[in-house]
Length: 532
Image (cartoon, rainbow, N blue to C red; front, side):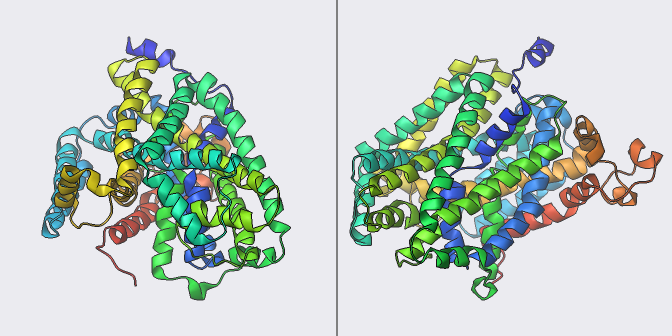
């Protein structure tokens, strides 16, 4: 029965389809909504350079890990980890001890919810082995999808508002009031959040080739076309060169240690690392494809879209005499005002085009999150795809509705507020903020760290390289650095002399450099390390 399930597993129709789908998973609101404003708040070009370095140190090595794990096992993240390391090891016991210490630390800060979560993870690491990383990779996209759908709903609503001429603002204050009224209306926000979730579910409903791959082949080229159109319009505005200079000319005097760590964390958010999406997508990949070239393609396209988004936004912002450091309101408040200030009769087309771009970016990421959970339910519980989609979508939409309502009215759920204040400490924020902070600061970096440690030290880079060689032999062969990279017993490494290769570099990074970088970023995100 299990063998038949593996043989019947659906696969991508072609390499381009996989690249586009995986790039779509990585490309999301993090590229077009978050990247421009955090770059604007952290020195522009200097931040961009540090971000690119973080992508190379963390992003590419983990992307290769995730695709390799998925293709090797042809299973969802939980089943994949369970197959490759089914029992507890000294490594998982060490991780369990680490989480136990973190649980005690959270108790000292009166964050009882986090203490309980870390205690559960500690027990799972002790008794289930590395499969607990796979479970985390299934749980994380559910949490993210719950609040991500809220922002996706906002983009849908603003797209329709733009088409109807409802985003013609005269001042930033007016733009802010309209956004608060829109997002603060429970009926409006929840309705558009449900519309976005239904669009996501409709694509995943039709499976890999007829759903996700087909949609990616349409949506990604359309996203590129919209971006390039907006860039050409922005660059023709008087004074646009100042925005280009800001984005591409590094000013390291504006970059702080805090900004470096923000860039490190954004590498996770932007590339959808640590949540099992690329493990799941990799499980639908056949062994004739080159994992290294796929990884490079995904990183290149994702980074390119982030930079193009900056070229579409900053020239327009500077041309209209506005500052680049306005924060999260850059997209939903400043950009509509910017298009209106162009003074054109076609301004409504530009603003509608911009929010359609955001809808597409959000949608391509959301379908990958939903697919992780659906694949888990299909593999583990033998559900059919349609049942898995409906059940997952219903639960995520309900959680998202509470997030949506809580954004401007946290007190609408006083009982829930009391639970979260007790669990996580403090009174700031709302359910949306709690989900965002918990996933970005804890789940994603811990998932990425677990994947790196697992491939580098537990499963072993030797076995990962054996899988990567299938379709990419010429990229892997290594030299004497193979010892440091964990490949000393690899027969091909011993059989002939080699020069330094991508395989060696990847092994060294995934065993040493990438985990250390993730640990530094994680400790800073939870407040245990300060570089200020």
